Amino acid sequence: MTLQLRLPAELQERLKQEAERRGQSSESVALHLLEEHLPPPLDARRAAALATLQQWMEEDAALSEEESERAEEFLRGLDAARTSNRPLFPAELKGITW
Image (cartoon, rainbow, N blue to C red; front, side, top):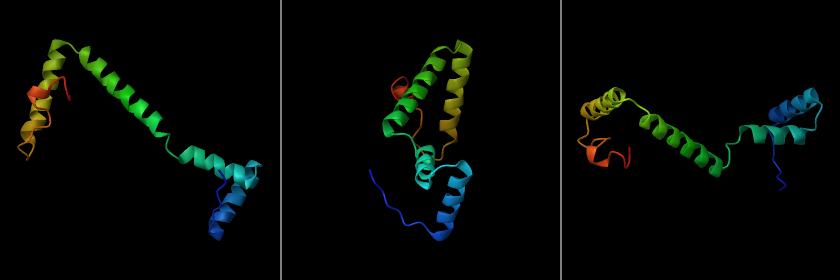
């Protein structure tokens, strides 16, 4: 894809200086900066989120009975401290949504 941008003079100068510093073309530096700073594709972010959730589920499954009880007590405490009557961690949804 070809993309044409109108850069403010100051930004154009900064890009030119960085390209000269790197010994590369301005286009190459701009492309590198875009690759470096744009978020990953949505599929990659979804995969990372799913991997994190899977890791948490595995960590929860590996908890001792005492650790599991403390975790549930913590969640009940969060629900009790809420100003809303709707709990974040309802017991009937355990294992389904949390």
